[in-house]
Length: 443
Image 1: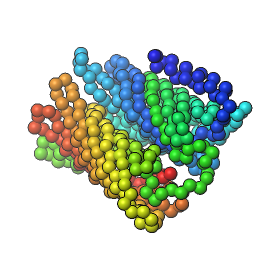
Image 2: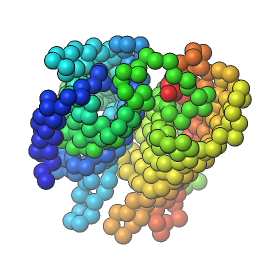
Image 3: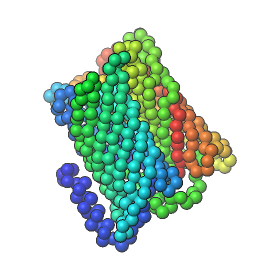
Image 4: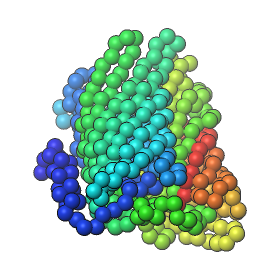
């Protein structure tokens, strides 16, 4: 099967089945969480022009604000498999693109087919080869619910971000992408998707620019928090400690300590985001994902002021157990995860496994969560192995002033990462502490 033909073939098949079906559906849902995985992708490497094959995860969550507005957060982590010697490859950060935005949508129904036209303004963060820049962007699209099973979406997204390399120079990272997605709804809650998008990554510095094209095919799994779109707007009881939620956090303060060869240096956090979400498809079982992206000001060390040190993506399944219910609520949980780490200015990507343990509690409009996360990630380059082991202690406080599942959060993460090379006594220790102010929506 050729991936280059599959999305268009599916779109045609979806349209054919949709027009023939008697059961039509309403407007698409804007309360969802989605996990996607890149099954095919390629781009030229900026430095050499050689073809790089892509893989990676994508996370996205949206929550409806009334009848015609929504908030949405998402991130695409693209890893490039780069050949450095014949038969030797290294995984590097090809492009990480995060966005958090507010948008509006308006459904138009023609002959029983509903198309939801939408537009969005966003804050964006783009990472490339160990560097990250902040900026703003926008997106446009159209979602068409053909019948009660099939949905298609056409979309376009663009952003402009920049970072200071030193006191005189800056680098602009300006990505854009356009694509098509086809969704098949398995039931009222779960939809699977196949998408193809094409993009450009423009790097501009000192009046010179270079653009790299990319193409990505991905499979996705979307969970609809409100089931049928018709249920939007209905009053639903939201548990105090729901395991159906999406959240976004913005860095407000932080610092990092680097210990290398008995030398210790302290630096400030420059900018960063935290995105996470949980979905509980069955009682006492949940799926969870978290992406932490922080850049640090290493200009005093002769580096840039927005450099990645040990960013982390975790995706996994867990189980929770309520231990108190009523006015005072509490639960404990455990999770097994797949972890991906991006290490320092080299943009190296390491993968491995980890686990998380946590306890949550709530009283009236206030809730709190305390958790511990540990992982072991590795990468082999030839006969040499590299290891990066993060250990995270975190706490999050939430206040829910409205009776709709929305909360204002304040989170703290202390992450201790040890980097080592197999057969070497040298070790790099990265100890960071960051505060995030954010928003959370429970369902």
